[in-house]
Amino acid sequence: MNYKVNNNWDIILKDEYEKEYFKNLLNYINEEYNNKTVYPLKENIFKALEYTDYNDIKVVILGQDPYHGEGEAQGLSFSIPNDIKITPSLRNIFKELKNDLNIERTNTDLSDWAKQGILLLNAILTVCKDTPLSHKDKGWEIFTDEIIKKINEREDPVIFILWGNYARSKKKLITNKNHYIIESAHPSPLSASRGFFDSKPFSKTNNILNSINKESIRW
Image (tube, one colour):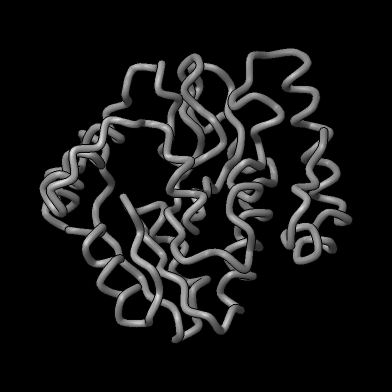
């Protein structure tokens, strides 16, 4: 499995790649791909890091684990290919985008966000078909916590968008006062009406970016 992403992340995560847990994790995940249906495609596991280099990060949107339906996951949190039926959480994200900034987005592939400096990071990077959280506690969380810690070390401000209790549990890793946190309920149908709708994360993000002389996100 190729875990090198050919940008600054390879330098920043160099020590992590050499750790025993990471090697064991990759061996385990390789076996899972060989014997089961696992998402996303193997070449897309590290796509979030490939698309958004360490030095380019303006925003982090943290998810838990990839979508587990056929063809949905593509290695970016909340993003799905355009030819796949929209997921309920993403539908609610777009509903809030319309409510917040009056933007009617239909493109479900969020690669354009990633390329503008939004790290679309899941805490767990793989999942078995139709089995949510099947790769929980296998080592991915250690790896992605390390990514969050490395971003936290940056002096340049980053906006962390934390939707739902799981993402909010990562707040303890964001200790640098230079950074910003926008948090609310999760956009899933179970919780969207309990604090996600009308939370205005998109305008809040752009207002912060404007205040620190950074270019707004084209949502």
